[in-house]
Image 1: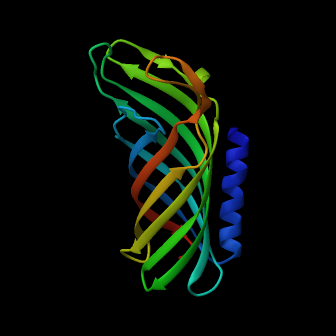
Image 2 (image 1 turned 90 degrees about the vertical axis):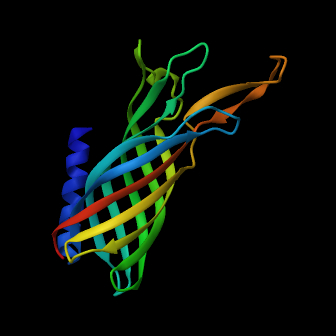
Length: 204
């Protein structure tokens, strides 16, 4: 996995230099949750992300952007009469593939798919710190990623992205109010809002 990540990073950097675009580092804070089709008591939690970006100019207003990103996702679980307050943490390595448009100077919009791979999954409360990877059905994920960016200086950019999970994490069994099985399905979809800074390190 480390060798693959290094190869991807080298490829991004080489392509960006060839295309006379730019490479950058990006990082910031995120608000993350897991959306279920059925009612749940999940609460969003604050996490973080970081990565390296390659941006390729196509024309004056259009561009393509990709990134090798490490991010922390998950959610909070409030305390109940039978359980302690806790958090669930998912660690992801992901690659967004975004098409962008710059309608006015210093401002751009972008959207596209984001491919992810879950590296680890843990659940923690006041008593236990558990590895829950065995409960995760899909380690590979596909998210829809949409974002905006505002250039503060030639080197520094403020951006925000919203990610909607298109693939589920878990297999679940559904029951009615009497506890009788009504079928099975897949559930648990990532919802992430990222706000961060992008700093151009070459090509700008």
